Image 1 (spheres, rainbow, N blue to C red):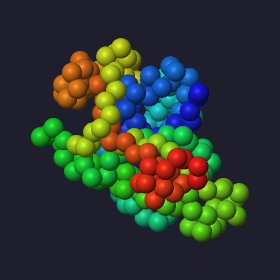
Image 2: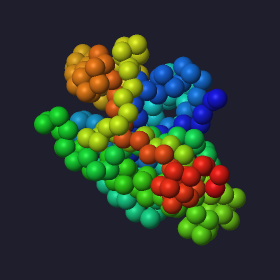
Image 3: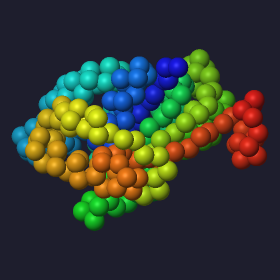
Length: 243
Ligand SMILES: [Zn+2]
């Protein structure tokens, strides 16, 4: 059965770098993918002569090329890059997107991750985006009385049954991406202003090997997953999904 899959990330390229192999496999299986970008990555330039408008135009064009490889739709929310906070406004905007798209599965950042690989401080926008996404997923998206203005927009509550978070130090799900690794590198490199091909291949191969080693796979992506239900207490009780 074809699923509706929605990614909620801070920047152009976040979905592709974090879950590109998995998204390529889902696209090949015929699932419908929507990429929601909270910012346009407008700080993604090292050239002081670049205007914000020029960076946004460049990155939107790159994102359109990457989305085309996934057959994905793109939604942009227009927040400022580098300044993201998990505000109630952002939570409302993410609830609005989820109630419109009504996904079966959401992919987002794990907001608990501060450091990776001994070389990387997680971008604060990634933590803020993950934080806002998790708070939108529970309980706002499923509760009509939170953000009643969205009901006035005709957007009814929705339960997202499955959530995949990453990158994570608490993985419970591994996806074998060996068969799509070259395609993943090509997907990431559509964001050409950010990712030169050779170090990109080497960096993502290293990360995919490290993740794969945890489960005896050559190359993998890993996730922390949640299986949500309309009634949390029924889910914890192991009751059938009737409510
Ligand atoms: Zn990012």
